[in-house]
Length: 82
Length: 130
Image 1: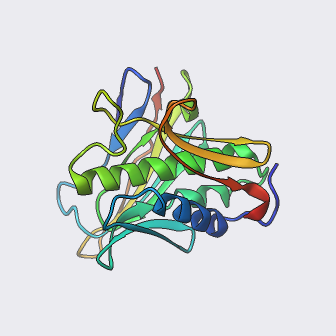
Image 2: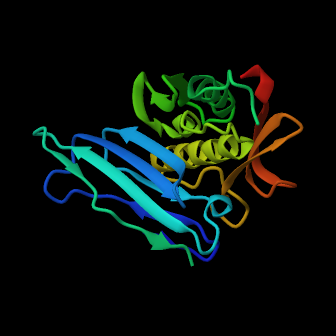
């Protein structure tokens, strides 16, 4: 995750063991879902400053099923938007 | 609040038709099951499932429709820019403008850049038509 001077939050997810397969990403700001991605390549995205006010909590919920069918899930996470 | 009939499927279809109208030649935008997809030569090269975020919104807050539209436009912007290997759309200083969306008087307005002088503006969507 990275913030920019215009307060956009950019994020990216990589599986260094097997990056292929199916991905699902749910993006939350203060428990409000602000984006969803379902795709066959590792997801990345950005959250508009309008949806990520300073002091809010940014969180990703990632599920990945790799090319061998192994399912992994992101650990609990969260960042305070500066 | 927005009408009960508004769903991720209807929002995705409306967004796809507007996005399709501004895409570079060779690309098309379609909707399927609440997702928006960019297609080139019959192959899906990327897309967004962001319209689905309104399905969990029990308050039917128009703010969530705006957020879904912004997130969709952002994802599509990435897909197109990566395809072109150029900023898209582009502003005079060569950077990519942020997408934005706002509901005003029942219309969902969509644009990239500054609202008063957008780098690209999409045809608005009348919420009651969704």
